[in-house]
Each structure stands twice: as C-alpha cells, then as structure tokens.
Length: 518
Image (cartoon, rainbow, N blue to C red):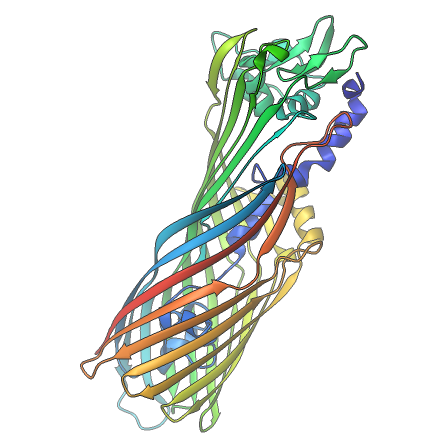
C-alpha cells in the first residue's frame, strides 16, 4: 500500500501542479494567455505583417502606435470580419487525432476623423479616432483516445485523497454544498467520493481506492482490465482593444498620438476526461465508466495608456515608436465541475459541484515598439518593426490588490516566463493605382524559459480602392511552425505513470476589410 504514504502523496501533488494545469487551467497559464497580443486589426495591416509602426495611416495600426491616425488627411470608416481556425494534432496512447476549432470574429471596426487647422506650418491637423481591434483569439480544440491497463485517472485521484475524512466529504442532507466550502479536499475528490467512484479502505480510514482498481492478496492496487481513456479540451474567446485616440500632424514631419485603451476580455474553457471498462466483470466494483467535466469562464475589463510618434527625417523615410503602460485587468471567473459514473457497487450517479466564483486582478507588462519604413513614391512601401515586452513582470492579485494571495502563481511567472523580442516585417506594392499587393512576416519569440514556444507567421493580402473613396482589402495569415506541448493526463502515482499527451498546434485566419474614405 505504498500509495498511502503521506510524504509520497505530498510530493506527487507538488510535482504534478504544472503538468495537471494543462488539463485544468491555472492562473499563471491564463495570465499569459490574456496578456499575449497577436494583432488582428484590418486586412491591410495583417497583410503587411502588422509592421506599420513607422508607416501609420491604418486603423489597425492604432493599437500598437497611436500616431498611426495622425497620418490621415481624410476621414475613414472600416469594418473587418474574419475567420480564425486553431488546429491541433494530438498523440495519445499510440493514437493520433487531428482537431480544429473555428471562430467568426470582428477583427476591426473603427472611425477616424481629421480636422484641418488651416495652417501651412506647425500643427496642420488634429485627428480623433475610435476603433475596436482584436488582439488575441483563443479558439482551440484538442482530443485524444486510447487503450491501456497500467494506470487510471480514478486511481490517481484516490491516491491524492490520502488523509481526508470520508465522513466530511459526504454531502449532508441539509446542505449538500457544505463539503465544497468547509473542507480542504479538492472539489474533484469530493465529487468522486459522493458518486461512488472512490472508496475508503475498510478499517483503514483516510486511505482511498479508485473504482477502476482491484486489491491483490498481498495488498497491492492494480488495474484488472483494459480501460478506454479519452480526453477533450476546448477554449474560445478573445481580447478586444477598444481605443479612444487623439493625434496631431506637425508640418508633415512629426506625428504624435495618444490612446486610452479599454480591453474587453472573454474566455470560455471546457475540459473532460473519461474512462470506460472494456470488460466490467474484471473489476471488483463492477466499474463501467466515468466522466469528469470542468467548465470555466473568465471575463473582465482592462485599461492602459499608450503614446506614440512617427517622424519623417528624409523624403520617403519614416521612423516610429510607441510605449504602453501595463494593462490593468479586472477579471471575474466562474467555474463548475461535474462527475458521473456507473459501478455495480453504487449504481449510476451524476453530480454537479456548486458554481465557484472569484474576482481578481492581473497586471500585464509594459510594451514598446520601434519601426522603420521607407516609401518609394506611391508605388512601394517597406517596413520593419521590433516589439519587446517582459512577461516575467506580470502580477496577479486579489480584488483588494493583495498579490500574496497568488504567491505560487506569481513565483511561477517570475521564474518560468521571460522577456520576448518580436519582429514584424511587411511590403506593400501598387502595380496599378487601384490595386495593392501585400506580404508580411511575424516572429514572436518564446515567453517560456524551459521550452520553445516561438511562433512564425506569414501573410499575404490584396486591396482595391475606387476613386469614390470605397475600398476593400483581403488578407490571409498562416502560422508557419507548430508549437509542441507535452503533459500528463493526470498525476503519476504509486510508481504508475500517467499517459502523456503530445500536442502540436498551429492556426490560420482570413480577414476582409470594407472601408470608405471621405
């Protein structure tokens, strides 16, 4: 009964926190998701790799350089619907499965108005803009299915419950939610106990066995038959920058701008893991099947301030830059777990946890951009951008601003996340006065210290404009590399190794911008 040694169980719980977080989200991983920015904006800006810090003149570029609006000498409105698809290839128990998740989005909608001062020198015009640009899309799906008989989710869960009191886990008739709030056991263990999927050993209180396990004559736990194991993960959501912008043009040489950005944040996550007995008669409990489901929704509001400039030191040459304060996010989350299963010993059961709720704060890092561009008349434009931000400086805190409430997550962030150097490059050519062709490239370096999670994107676009002011742009962006992530489906226990999930993920998107200049 080596699983019943408290010191081993404690070590398992600590060492498994990072791997288990891949199946059930943790705060440090969601902090990175919510703080990362993979700009959408307009089809023009995406087609050029969002390398427009020094070029401006685009409503999508306002999100990373407020001075982009100062280039305008006319008013403009745009709307950009898009389709984003995340693709995941999964290796699990010698099986390969490909999954995808698509999401229809509104990558950009905006207006810029220009106001001429009538001067020939100095402040020639000042502009105002209001635009919403999507800066992250969370569409993702992954699944796996396979057979094994060496370990089980319920066996791992039972091992983690060592030392708990079964009587205090049981739902009291007068208040079935009490164990979830009045006892230190995890919610998954409480559900499994009340669904009859874990049980305490007779005469050995505080020691538990999973419904998928038998006990041999010498007191060892083992899986008596083949289990069909399956898992499923899905995530959807977005971060949208709602930008209130003001900018100015000084002698067509120096352009400046400031943003007040309000972020709209929404993310929904769902995970499920199940086990099914190929032959229930081999299990002493008559175990047939079980499923554990977890749902979590995070929503909130972020706010930051940003300032930027563009300068033209020589004909055709432009240099731009911007700096943004941290984004102060005020987040609310709700979550719920469900557990269902069937054994001959306890019958079929399905139980929901109460709705959990929490409010907290996330401070994302400073972010700055530098860019250089060159235009050859009205026929060709080239640009390169550099962006830097340090994800190890993110801080989580409770609703009162107390970061000690998230000491583990903040320690993880400062230790295992790092500063990134992102490069964007783009080219735009006008072979005809009405036709534009665009190419772009993005490199996002890895925010993780221990493994490479960098991303390479290539994009292409085309645009048409009419003499009446109407224009239409289209763009396609494809991730060129695949990001790999390996994690255990549950915790190792008693020397039994949990199956490893190997994921490779990439994504692509299509954007279409409709606009009018007047």
